[in-house]
Image 1: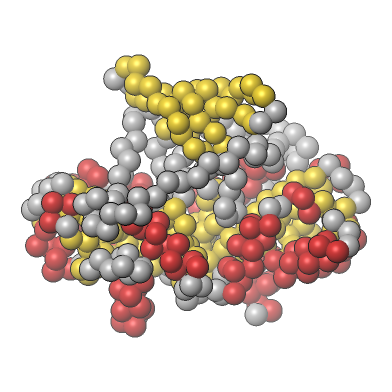
Image 2 (image 1 turned 180 degrees about the vertical axis):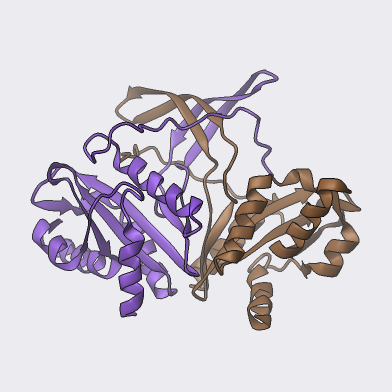
Length: 191
Length: 191
């Protein structure tokens, strides 16, 4: 079992800027999840970035320093957790594109993972942020899979209109920042 | 959104040694989870180790090299996923101690996290590996919390006998290596 050294670092949040454009999508989602957690609504966390560590130094008693490491391709998604007894799993992606969402943004094994979650009675989806339009959509895995299948022989992206038609628009609020669980309530209600 | 460079590294598994003593507890659990995944039984993954990245170099087109990073204290547990529609969350710990499991092995916020999962109708527990005894136990969170509370004023560990009495012994098999979901079936049945 790994013993974590006592070096602790804090994530610095941009608290002053309240527009999607000024704050990273990841930070907005993290803030939302912190809200859900602190209000005991859901327990949803971002997974750490997978890294292959090659070399670690121990320059002092204060802790270890990683001196050589590499990014690994993630085998699953960025976020998972529990809400109302249900397993929640999603990926969050942003694009500068105004008219479509390029499917190259999502790895094949991530789509497979999201599909498996549905099969095992979890709730999975992708949150898509159109930066230039300042719009966020929640798209259920079934649609992601449908358009992914189309992309094998046809267009390599999902049209903005298709996302608008099949997804759920999420308006940004103050607290929580993007209340995506409101959409999950709708999805649960529909069964 | 982070773009992962194309540097890919593979996890080397010790496939030849089939005793708990020869293989790390983590590897045994990972192998078990791979079995569950490949047999479409459950989707349970180990989360990556949380790391704070400080400096990244780009020496060539082949990808980024992390040159300075630090371990962070994990805010949740090592493993989570879905089984039979239920959210599963656990921590795995090993000890060389023969007579007790020291509670210093588990962070307070991890115990809090496990307790919250139960409250939200998930299934949470700890897998404890007594290395010297070559024995593995699954202990439900309710017992972990009970002994943690005792530790505030009393003994700082859980006695081996207490784990034996309240936990579930898991025998090592070949495939899957440690079939802990068999225990989860019992726990689900009991309600």
